[in-house]
Structures are given as structure tokens and as C-alpha cells.
Image (cartoon, rainbow, N blue to C red; front, side):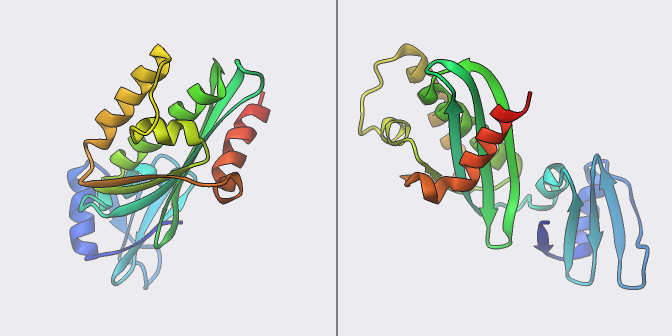
Length: 197
């Protein structure tokens, strides 16, 4: 549940400018409420709390000023190639901002890892962050993107170009290889997507 400390009058204006209907709060403590999709933003004196299953779009409008996000990403394939899926998590000082996972058809582990990184970067950009610190457990993908390994596979080379195009949209970025246990939540999301029929 994202919590955004802000001037709630400015936040209301941002939502209204984005076409989100804002109404009075339901209690004496609530200044106003705004809903879109499966999410509701509730304003208090100096913060907005976003509740619901899909807070992403409302938070993207309210966090327009930028900021730093930490992202974990992972791809999984059962068989190489085989059914593949991705998972990613965006984390800030407020906790988990968003997470996502989906099946991506048939692919290799490396293709899934790149797809997870691309999806995570697109999500971070949608939220308006201008600094991103990425962590993944694929040493190959991390070192290819950082330029430490060559990319001989044409499809992976194309995905690496896409990643660099996305990274160029941030003021600052880092990409770090971490052990699988440090990347556990993103791994669980990718595997849960594979388990869904």
C-alpha cells in the first residue's frame, strides 16, 4: 500500500488534471478520495494512501516529481526453451510500490531474464522515477548490459539495445548481480506466473 507524503491540495490538482474524479472523504479525517480502476487514493492532512489491487496508475500521477526506486527482476523458463514467465518488484523507502508477473510464451532462461528487466524498466518509467537501482540473479544478463560480456545471440543483442534505450531515460542507474536468495520475491512472482494455467 503506497503512502505518499505530499501537499494533498497539489496532489488533488494533479489527479484532476489527469482526468481522475476526486470527491469528498468518507470520514472527518479524510480530506478527499479518488478512484481509478481497482485503486483508491485517500488524502489525509499531509499524505495520500493508495489502496487496492492496482495502485500503479494513481501513484504514477502523484509521484510525478521523480525519485529513486530499487527494482528486483527475474525470468524463469521450464525447459530451455520452454514455457517462460517474468517477475519484477519496485521498492522504495515506503516498501513495495508495485510488482508484476506474467507468462511470456516460450523462451529460454536468458530471454525471460531480459524480458523481466525490460518490463521492470517500463514500469519504473511509468511511475515517474528518475533514478533506478536494479538487481537480478542472471549474471549473464547483468554483465552483458554492463558491457562486461559480449552478446553473440542476435535476439539477446536486440533486447540489450532495448534495455539501454530504457536506461538512457533515467538520470542515474545501477545494475547489480545478486544471489537468487536476495532476489527471492521476483523469482517467486515469475514461478507463480508459470504455475497459473
